[in-house]
Image (cartoon, rainbow, N blue to C red):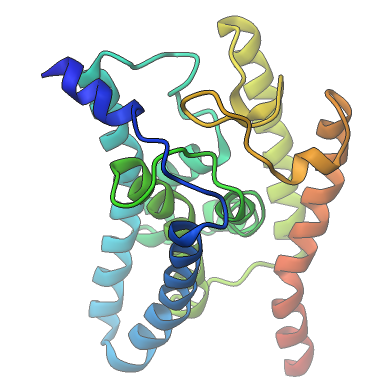
Amino acid sequence: MRQALKEYLYNDSTFEIFGAGHIVGLVVSVLLIVFIPLFSLKYLSKDSQARFGAIIGYIVMLSYPVWIVLELAAGTFSTTLHLPVHLCRISNLLIPLVMVKRHFLTFEILFFWGLSGTLQGAITPDISAGFPHFYYFRFWIAHNGLVLALVYAAVVYKMWPTPKSIKKSFLALNLFLIFAMIVNLVLDANYFWICGKPVTPIGEHVPTILDFMGPWPWYIVAAEFVALIHFLIAYTPFYFINKRKV
């Protein structure tokens, strides 16, 4: 049983970046991110909106622990690979605070993380398995499901970031970077892609925006500036909305 599960998890290499499965995943994600918040806002009561939001939050959150359970069952769990020391994983675990508790500080931090690094991850996925593999669905739920949750919170719950939110999220990003550095030193790992550029679960290089930022360690420095630019772009719609209200 354990060997069969291990083979299932790691013997699929059918995913192709910008192949049919990737394009379909992106298109479906965009449609859901646009349609679900608008549908909820127009047709659901406040109570139903809250329940629907909670369901989204818990589904996104569970994408991480379910994966870990499978890795443990297959005997492939590793502290150097599977801890929640990537932005998407820690964001998955924290998103119920936004969707259920409506904790605004958590929203401020995750909003910019989700609409920058996590969204970038959807464009250049670090997976090898294609549809209908578990890894395929887990990836889209963990990444674009997170974006859906954050857009839902902004549109339905009216949780809007402020200019100070950019500073808070950027500070939190760098604190997480320091934390990941410490974990990497202790475990000899490569969390947050600090020690090397992304690879798939089977060790294949993944082409990402980091490839345009130079070699290690300079791409880490460049990524700081790129992240800040992404944060500013993510805030732009709210800047113009607030400006129109003045």
